[in-house]
Image (cartoon, rainbow, N blue to C red):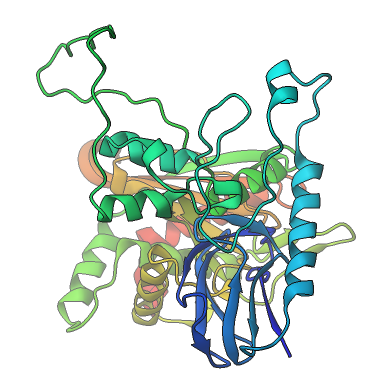
Length: 431
């Protein structure tokens, strides 16, 4: 019996996925549990396993293509099994979906009326180059940019995408095959000279259209859900980090393996402060404000095309060394896009640290349903007045964004007061 390979919902917020790579070629034999493909979700890259054994008879969604959750992307079956009806149904559904999303026009232009009908999509095999009604080659923005940068003609590249669309993989194949560079303009062609940069070797801007990654789409949707409906207010304080940094140096001197980082101190201080102020370790729900029974801290991690917040669980029950080891592992796997959904969902409070980028202070957007997020700036040495005398101190500014439905101003201020006290008297955190 044929086994369907579908675009599975690999994370709770996933609505569509991008097929990065097929690990198995069409026609290859597979067993249940074999890795078939790699999918880019809204948070991480994840593998798709075969749910049954047989031969990968058909690949319906080529690499580089995005498809909604539930879309049939491949079929596994016995070599002689009839899968024509299954493929016909999948193509009909794909065609209907494409038709429903096409932009309507009041009246087609004459060229479109006279153009021959376009062939039905055949996503399984490589297709000849196709052009739109205006003669423009069909190619993804990424493929166009890659071809332009490599100096090769799009017309020389066979397209393997739907309806012959040229996709990223096709350009990569052409480059490996040594495609000829684009021809220079003919003798009768005149081109305007590029302006000479004011500084020799200065970079030039290039017009680009960067396709949205699944992560970027989710970030955009989540920000709209937060910054509009959630009533933010902000509280800022400045902390003397001298004692905390001195304690960190002493602790690290006795560690043979991984070292405790400033971020680990922030996580521990936040966890201790949240235990003392459970009204901040809370979430807004339609019927109630939920105060959580443990501290699960999100750590905002910047990626090339967005950010992700791996979650360190039960931080209130862990020591600094454990926090350091576990957070370092989570951050490393986050940067390699190898987190499981349960490792980046369900934080009760989040810390976003941009101090390493020399940012003095900033405000962060709350990640619902959390009620607050702490934005951390750099630690810098500055002159401050202490008991009437000017002294040099290592100071750090932090700003907490609060959901006013859950946290009132005085509540947030008391939390920050405790957080500050923890870092200015750090022995409290290790005793």
